[in-house]
Amino acid sequence: MKNILVPIEMHSSIESVLTTAHLLAKRVDGYVEGMPLGPDLPDLVAFDMPVSWTMADQNTWKELAEEAHRRFEVFMTEHAVPVHAEGVPGLSYGFAGDRSFGDSQIASYARVFDVTVLGRPGSERGDPRMATAEACLFESGRPVLLAPPEPPKSVAETIVIAWNHSMESARSTAFAMPLLKAAKKVFILTIEAHNAEGPAAEQLQQMLALHGIQADIIHRLGKNRPAGLAYLEDSATLGADLMIKGAYTQSRLRQMIFGGATSHIMAKAQLPVLMAN
Image (tube, rainbow, N blue to C red; front, top):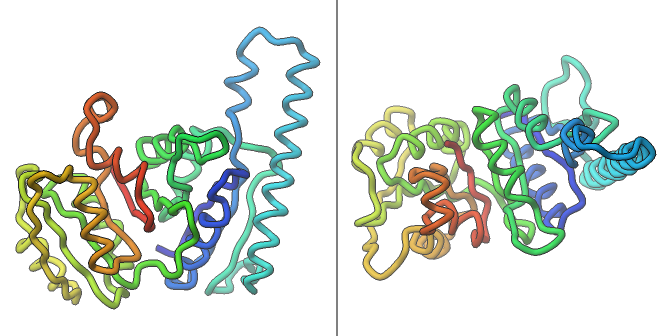
Protein backbone atom coordinates (compact mmCIF):
# COMPACT_ATOMS: atom_id res chain seq x y z
CA MET A 1 0.00 0.00 0.00
CA LYS A 2 2.66 2.45 -1.15
CA ASN A 3 0.66 4.62 -3.53
CA ILE A 4 -1.92 6.88 -1.81
CA LEU A 5 -4.36 9.26 -3.51
CA VAL A 6 -5.83 12.19 -1.56
CA PRO A 7 -8.58 14.23 -3.24
CA ILE A 8 -8.38 17.74 -1.78
CA GLU A 9 -11.54 19.74 -1.13
CA MET A 10 -11.95 22.48 1.48
CA HIS A 11 -14.47 20.58 3.61
CA SER A 12 -14.82 20.33 7.38
CA SER A 13 -12.58 17.22 7.69
CA ILE A 14 -9.69 18.26 5.46
CA GLU A 15 -7.22 18.40 8.37
CA SER A 16 -8.15 14.86 9.37
CA VAL A 17 -7.90 13.61 5.78
CA LEU A 18 -4.39 15.03 5.43
CA THR A 19 -3.34 13.72 8.84
CA THR A 20 -4.73 10.25 8.10
CA ALA A 21 -2.97 10.11 4.73
CA HIS A 22 0.29 11.29 6.30
CA LEU A 23 0.14 8.73 9.13
CA LEU A 24 -0.60 5.96 6.64
CA ALA A 25 2.22 7.06 4.33
CA LYS A 26 4.67 7.15 7.23
CA ARG A 27 3.61 3.66 8.26
CA VAL A 28 4.19 2.18 4.79
CA ASP A 29 6.99 4.55 3.69
CA GLY A 30 4.80 5.53 0.76
CA TYR A 31 3.96 8.21 -1.76
CA VAL A 32 1.00 10.60 -1.29
CA GLU A 33 -0.51 12.38 -4.27
CA GLY A 34 -2.96 15.24 -3.86
CA MET A 35 -5.61 16.02 -6.46
CA PRO A 36 -8.12 18.90 -6.44
CA LEU A 37 -11.71 17.74 -6.00
CA GLY A 38 -14.71 19.72 -7.19
CA PRO A 39 -17.87 19.40 -9.31
CA ASP A 40 -17.56 17.51 -12.57
CA LEU A 41 -17.33 20.52 -14.91
CA PRO A 42 -18.21 18.65 -18.12
CA ASP A 43 -21.48 17.57 -16.48
CA LEU A 44 -22.25 21.13 -15.46
CA VAL A 45 -21.52 22.55 -18.89
CA ALA A 46 -23.97 20.04 -20.42
CA PHE A 47 -26.86 22.17 -19.14
CA ASP A 48 -28.11 25.26 -21.02
CA MET A 49 -26.25 28.01 -19.21
CA PRO A 50 -24.99 31.37 -20.40
CA VAL A 51 -21.42 31.22 -21.67
CA SER A 52 -20.39 33.99 -19.30
CA TRP A 53 -21.69 31.98 -16.31
CA THR A 54 -19.87 28.87 -17.48
CA MET A 55 -16.55 30.67 -17.87
CA ALA A 56 -16.92 32.34 -14.48
CA ASP A 57 -17.68 28.97 -12.93
CA GLN A 58 -14.61 27.38 -14.52
CA ASN A 59 -12.45 30.23 -13.21
CA THR A 60 -13.90 29.75 -9.74
CA TRP A 61 -13.09 26.05 -9.68
CA LYS A 62 -9.61 26.74 -11.04
CA GLU A 63 -9.08 29.07 -8.07
CA LEU A 64 -10.34 26.37 -5.72
CA ALA A 65 -7.86 23.93 -7.27
CA GLU A 66 -5.05 26.39 -6.61
CA GLU A 67 -6.23 26.75 -3.01
CA ALA A 68 -6.30 22.95 -2.66
CA HIS A 69 -2.74 22.74 -3.99
CA ARG A 70 -1.55 25.35 -1.51
CA ARG A 71 -3.30 23.63 1.40
CA PHE A 72 -1.83 20.26 0.51
CA GLU A 73 1.68 21.59 -0.02
CA VAL A 74 1.69 23.59 3.23
CA PHE A 75 0.66 20.50 5.21
CA MET A 76 3.34 18.30 3.63
CA THR A 77 6.01 20.95 4.12
CA GLU A 78 5.05 21.48 7.77
CA HIS A 79 5.36 17.72 8.33
CA ALA A 80 8.74 17.51 6.60
CA VAL A 81 7.52 15.26 3.77
CA PRO A 82 9.86 15.64 0.76
CA VAL A 83 8.70 16.24 -2.80
CA HIS A 84 8.76 13.03 -4.82
CA ALA A 85 11.85 12.47 -6.94
CA GLU A 86 11.76 9.87 -9.72
CA GLY A 87 13.63 6.72 -8.73
CA VAL A 88 13.98 7.75 -5.09
CA PRO A 89 12.01 5.43 -2.76
CA GLY A 90 10.51 6.37 0.57
CA LEU A 91 8.04 8.83 2.03
CA SER A 92 7.24 11.62 -0.45
CA TYR A 93 4.43 13.64 -2.01
CA GLY A 94 3.29 15.08 -5.31
CA PHE A 95 0.28 16.93 -6.74
CA ALA A 96 -1.71 16.29 -9.92
CA GLY A 97 -3.90 18.72 -11.84
CA ASP A 98 -4.31 22.48 -12.16
CA ARG A 99 -8.13 22.38 -12.12
CA SER A 100 -10.79 20.66 -10.03
CA PHE A 101 -11.87 17.14 -10.98
CA GLY A 102 -15.32 15.60 -10.52
CA ASP A 103 -16.15 12.54 -8.45
CA SER A 104 -16.13 10.11 -11.39
CA GLN A 105 -12.85 11.52 -12.68
CA ILE A 106 -11.27 11.10 -9.25
CA ALA A 107 -12.59 7.54 -9.04
CA SER A 108 -11.19 6.71 -12.47
CA TYR A 109 -7.75 8.07 -11.56
CA ALA A 110 -7.86 6.14 -8.27
CA ARG A 111 -7.61 2.86 -10.22
CA VAL A 112 -3.81 3.24 -10.36
CA PHE A 113 -3.48 3.86 -6.61
CA ASP A 114 -3.44 1.38 -3.74
CA VAL A 115 -5.94 3.39 -1.68
CA THR A 116 -7.85 6.68 -1.74
CA VAL A 117 -8.14 8.69 1.49
CA LEU A 118 -11.40 10.62 1.89
CA GLY A 119 -13.27 12.37 4.66
CA ARG A 120 -16.08 10.44 6.28
CA PRO A 121 -19.28 11.76 4.65
CA GLY A 122 -21.44 14.09 6.69
CA SER A 123 -24.91 15.60 6.47
CA GLU A 124 -24.01 19.21 7.29
CA ARG A 125 -23.14 21.88 4.76
CA GLY A 126 -19.38 21.88 4.26
CA ASP A 127 -18.94 18.19 5.21
CA PRO A 128 -17.33 15.65 2.83
CA ARG A 129 -19.85 14.40 0.24
CA MET A 130 -21.29 10.88 0.09
CA ALA A 131 -21.16 11.07 -3.72
CA THR A 132 -17.35 11.17 -3.65
CA ALA A 133 -17.05 8.16 -1.33
CA GLU A 134 -19.54 6.10 -3.33
CA ALA A 135 -17.92 7.00 -6.66
CA CYS A 136 -14.55 5.79 -5.38
CA LEU A 137 -16.04 2.66 -3.81
CA PHE A 138 -17.97 1.59 -6.90
CA GLU A 139 -15.90 2.96 -9.79
CA SER A 140 -12.24 2.70 -8.77
CA GLY A 141 -11.92 -1.02 -8.05
CA ARG A 142 -9.68 -0.01 -5.14
CA PRO A 143 -10.29 0.48 -1.40
CA VAL A 144 -11.22 3.73 0.28
CA LEU A 145 -9.84 4.88 3.63
CA LEU A 146 -12.37 7.12 5.38
CA ALA A 147 -10.82 9.60 7.79
CA PRO A 148 -12.89 10.50 10.87
CA PRO A 149 -13.98 14.11 11.50
CA GLU A 150 -11.15 14.66 14.03
CA PRO A 151 -7.52 13.86 13.10
CA PRO A 152 -6.43 10.47 14.47
CA LYS A 153 -3.33 10.04 16.62
CA SER A 154 -2.29 6.83 14.85
CA VAL A 155 -3.39 4.60 11.98
CA ALA A 156 -3.18 0.79 11.62
CA GLU A 157 -1.33 -0.04 14.83
CA THR A 158 -4.35 -1.88 16.25
CA ILE A 159 -6.65 -3.19 13.51
CA VAL A 160 -10.13 -4.66 13.80
CA ILE A 161 -11.45 -6.72 10.90
CA ALA A 162 -15.25 -6.44 10.91
CA TRP A 163 -15.81 -9.97 9.62
CA ASN A 164 -19.32 -10.89 8.48
CA HIS A 165 -18.24 -13.77 6.19
CA SER A 166 -19.06 -11.76 3.05
CA MET A 167 -17.24 -11.29 -0.26
CA GLU A 168 -16.94 -7.56 0.50
CA SER A 169 -15.23 -8.30 3.83
CA ALA A 170 -12.87 -10.71 2.08
CA ARG A 171 -11.89 -8.11 -0.54
CA SER A 172 -11.33 -5.43 2.10
CA THR A 173 -9.15 -7.79 4.12
CA ALA A 174 -7.11 -8.73 1.04
CA PHE A 175 -6.47 -5.07 0.21
CA ALA A 176 -5.37 -4.47 3.81
CA MET A 177 -2.79 -7.28 3.97
CA PRO A 178 0.28 -4.95 4.00
CA LEU A 179 -1.21 -3.07 6.94
CA LEU A 180 -2.22 -6.25 8.76
CA LYS A 181 1.34 -7.60 8.47
CA ALA A 182 2.76 -4.43 10.01
CA ALA A 183 0.14 -4.01 12.77
CA LYS A 184 0.97 -4.45 16.43
CA LYS A 185 -2.40 -6.08 17.15
CA VAL A 186 -5.10 -7.60 14.92
CA PHE A 187 -8.61 -8.62 15.97
CA ILE A 188 -11.25 -10.46 13.96
CA LEU A 189 -14.56 -9.14 15.24
CA THR A 190 -17.81 -10.96 14.50
CA ILE A 191 -21.25 -9.80 15.55
CA GLU A 192 -23.61 -12.73 16.02
CA ALA A 193 -26.86 -12.57 14.02
CA HIS A 194 -25.36 -10.12 11.51
CA ASN A 195 -23.38 -12.48 9.26
CA ALA A 196 -23.70 -13.61 5.66
CA GLU A 197 -23.07 -17.16 4.47
CA GLY A 198 -19.36 -17.85 4.22
CA PRO A 199 -16.15 -18.82 6.02
CA ALA A 200 -16.11 -18.43 9.79
CA ALA A 201 -13.72 -16.21 11.72
CA GLU A 202 -11.60 -19.24 12.60
CA GLN A 203 -10.99 -19.92 8.89
CA LEU A 204 -9.95 -16.32 8.31
CA GLN A 205 -7.64 -16.60 11.32
CA GLN A 206 -5.97 -19.66 9.77
CA MET A 207 -5.47 -17.88 6.45
CA LEU A 208 -3.89 -14.86 8.16
CA ALA A 209 -1.59 -17.14 10.17
CA LEU A 210 -0.18 -18.52 6.92
CA HIS A 211 0.88 -14.95 6.12
CA GLY A 212 2.53 -14.55 9.51
CA ILE A 213 -0.33 -12.49 10.96
CA GLN A 214 -1.50 -13.41 14.46
CA ALA A 215 -5.13 -12.41 14.97
CA ASP A 216 -7.38 -12.81 18.00
CA ILE A 217 -11.05 -13.65 17.44
CA ILE A 218 -13.70 -11.66 19.30
CA HIS A 219 -17.29 -12.92 19.10
CA ARG A 220 -19.95 -10.47 20.25
CA LEU A 221 -23.72 -10.77 20.55
CA GLY A 222 -25.72 -8.66 18.15
CA LYS A 223 -28.96 -8.80 20.11
CA ASN A 224 -30.46 -5.34 20.69
CA ARG A 225 -27.54 -3.69 18.83
CA PRO A 226 -27.53 -2.85 15.11
CA ALA A 227 -24.44 -4.28 13.42
CA GLY A 228 -22.88 -0.91 12.59
CA LEU A 229 -23.23 0.34 16.15
CA ALA A 230 -21.86 -2.94 17.51
CA TYR A 231 -18.78 -2.84 15.26
CA LEU A 232 -18.01 0.74 16.28
CA GLU A 233 -18.59 0.21 20.01
CA ASP A 234 -16.51 -2.96 20.16
CA SER A 235 -13.72 -1.51 18.03
CA ALA A 236 -13.49 1.40 20.46
CA THR A 237 -13.35 -1.03 23.41
CA LEU A 238 -10.49 -2.89 21.70
CA GLY A 239 -8.54 0.35 21.18
CA ALA A 240 -8.57 0.08 17.39
CA ASP A 241 -7.15 2.85 15.23
CA LEU A 242 -8.32 1.20 11.99
CA MET A 243 -11.37 -0.85 11.05
CA ILE A 244 -11.41 -3.08 7.97
CA LYS A 245 -14.99 -3.29 6.68
CA GLY A 246 -16.66 -4.61 3.56
CA ALA A 247 -18.89 -1.93 2.02
CA TYR A 248 -22.56 -2.57 1.26
CA THR A 249 -22.98 -6.30 1.83
CA GLN A 250 -26.65 -5.32 1.53
CA SER A 251 -27.59 -3.19 -1.47
CA ARG A 252 -27.23 0.58 -1.33
CA LEU A 253 -30.97 1.01 -1.97
CA ARG A 254 -31.90 -1.29 0.90
CA GLN A 255 -29.51 0.55 3.23
CA MET A 256 -30.90 3.93 2.16
CA ILE A 257 -34.41 2.75 3.08
CA PHE A 258 -33.81 0.49 6.08
CA GLY A 259 -30.30 1.39 7.21
CA GLY A 260 -27.37 -1.00 7.51
CA ALA A 261 -23.90 -1.47 8.95
CA THR A 262 -22.11 0.38 6.13
CA SER A 263 -24.47 3.35 6.28
CA HIS A 264 -24.15 3.59 10.06
CA ILE A 265 -20.35 3.36 10.02
CA MET A 266 -20.04 5.91 7.20
CA ALA A 267 -22.17 8.31 9.24
CA LYS A 268 -20.78 7.72 12.75
CA ALA A 269 -17.23 6.30 12.73
CA GLN A 270 -14.71 8.13 14.92
CA LEU A 271 -11.74 6.06 13.69
CA PRO A 272 -10.29 5.48 10.21
CA VAL A 273 -12.19 2.83 8.24
CA LEU A 274 -10.81 0.96 5.23
CA MET A 275 -13.64 -0.14 2.94
CA ALA A 276 -14.02 -1.97 -0.37
CA ASN A 277 -16.99 -3.26 -2.28
